Length: 128
Image (tube, rainbow, N blue to C red; front, side, top):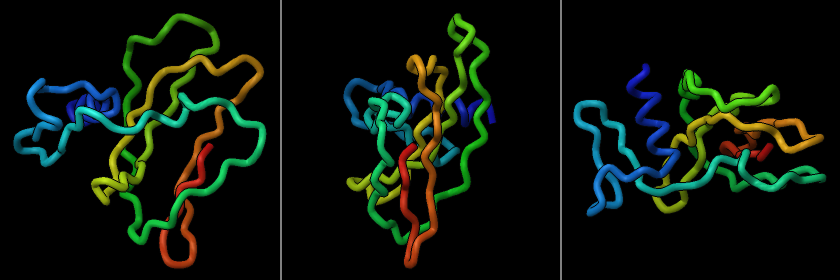
């Protein structure tokens, strides 16, 4: 579990394992570590209105990965763990894991996570 969490963290942070390739394959685990990808939605600008739902994906997202927050927590009283989630990657036509991270919420704001909702013929991401 710890190794998988570390590999997922590497995926989300966009760290390249090899400068000559866009991605690398982790031996024996079947987990592909990407050198680039989307940024966690918690980095987005705050919004005052309800977020718009994403496209409908015909496949169900995988079960969330149980992440263990890193022991090294940033200093501050208001620091909170923002969990990871599955995002749809149009280019790959597959789900990719966006790893969680520590964050101090913007002043006067509360973190509300997004999530996948089952709709008619598939699943749709509704941002937080």
